[in-house]
Length: 81
Image (cartoon, rainbow, N blue to C red; front, top):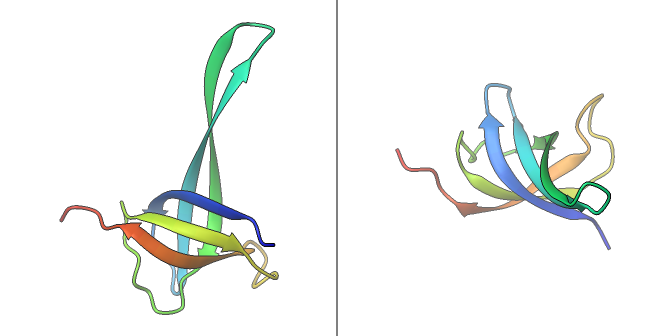
C-alpha cells in the first residue's frame, strides 16, 4: 500500500511539478506541548491542474526526478480566486 499525504500547494511555477506543504501535529510528552511541523514535497502533476492554495492529496511513487517522489492523486478543495 502506498503512503498518502494531504497538504496545500505552495508553488506551481515548474512545468508538471507542484510543491505541496504538509503539516504534522505532534505532542511532546516530555515538555507537555503540541508542536506543528511543516514538510515540503515535490509532486508530479502531468495535467497541470493544481494551482497555489489548493488542498491536494498526493501518493508515493517511484523516483521521477532528483526531487520528485510523489504523484498528485486528487484535488480535494480548490483555492478561492
